[in-house]
Amino acid sequence: MDEKDKRFFEQLIAKQDEKTEQLLAKQDEKMEQGLAKQDEKTEQLLAKQDEKTEQRLVKQDEKMEQRLAKQDEKMEQRLAKQDEKMEQILAKQNEEFKQFVGVLMENTDHKIALVAESHQVLHEEIKGTRAELKKDIGLCNFKIDTLNDKIDAVDEKLTKKIDGVATDLKAHRNDTEAHHNVYCVKESS
Image 1: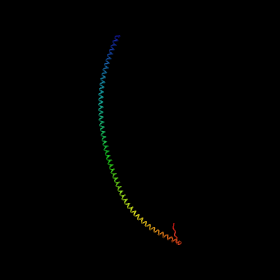
Image 2: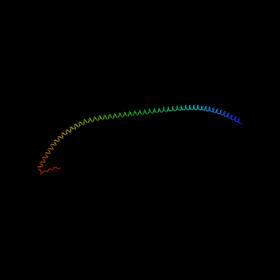
Image 3: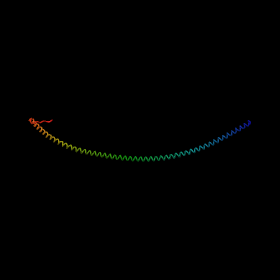
Image 4: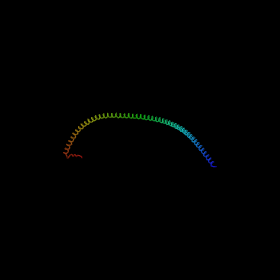
């Protein structure tokens, strides 16, 4: 192989390399286009999938919202019923309390009336007793005055009798002392 052949082969190899490069470049370009188309299709599929997923999520959200709304409505109804029951219970207890207080007030009023009536009766009795006592005291004063008069009369009589006895005793003593030897009177101590 001479130099010419060598150049020829080199040129042939260079042309072949150039054609191979061109073919590879075309192949790369086709591959890039295919991959770009594949990417675009994949993007479209992913976009569709995302849209479907988004729609599913929206539907799920709507269903959840509806369920929550129903649950809220049920809870509100239950709470309303409970509130109504509590209001009824409170109203009933309030009414019972009012009745109890009314009965208590009537009972208290009745007791106060009884106390007032008893007080009036006692006042009348005290008044009557006071009048009776005044009469009795007047009668007692009359009797005491009468007794004082009688006692004074008895006192006068006794004083006169005692004075008479004292006079008689004195005379008797004098007489006894005059007859000293015959009679002896001793006073005992």
